[in-house]
Image 1: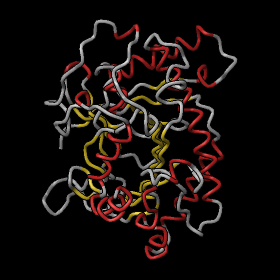
Image 2: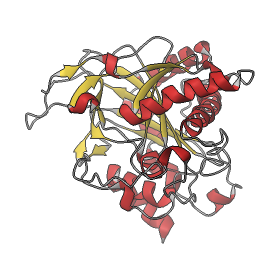
Image 3: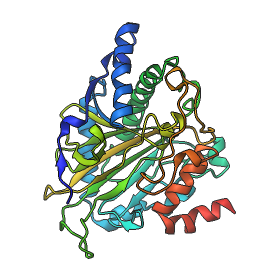
Length: 352
């Protein structure tokens, strides 16, 4: 395996000034500058001082472990095929693909809780609707919804800092492409297992990929296993991004890459669980609205910048800058490859 570099290559940023409404403009701009540097140089960064209740995080983690410890037949009672076009529910180990290879993880797909009377739900819009919550453990539903609300607030705060880093008004994203964000949340369990798969390749919990949207906010447990592709100093190599107490790991996705013409780059990452025990991971995806048109933005920090053509360097050989359309178009094309059977069984019916 490629030699793994130092965690020092992923910066730690105290974002207290962004989440505290009483902070002064100078303090907010100072944090924004650090965020901008991280987006340009790393695409990944840790955030501390985020204000998300530690007791809530601990409770959600304990409830998640309880759920994954249940017999598989109980977990399958809320399998994703029952979620319809909302694409919510449980999938077992090997049920999700990355680059055509089964991931060594199981998971629970969740998102903004929408009732049957919501216009997007009535229209059968994919990835919108009610969540499928298990009957056991009790309290998981309440913890998830409280966590989603807290992370949504944090997401808006961080995007405010990113807007400032580009020379834009702090509310630029909150009143534009992120005014009605698509919020998706995953709870993943990576079981322990062999270091290699049957073909001799590493048994990746999830293989190399970039995230699709704008911003991912990840809570990971102490098992570690997250690796980030670094380009610092012109040298391409993988670096570990282990858990830091009290922090979230954040990374930018393909749509922010596109909006900034490649100046803020979505960075490939992967997971290999080498801890010898289960690894819990809770990624929160804070993305453009379903119908938002995603196009390059005009920002002072981007004046004179030509769009980067980087398909030859990307993990999938595809250029995000060639895309034209709404975020919903982009996302549906991507997730259909992750769950091809589910797309053919569920989404094709909703599209017909």
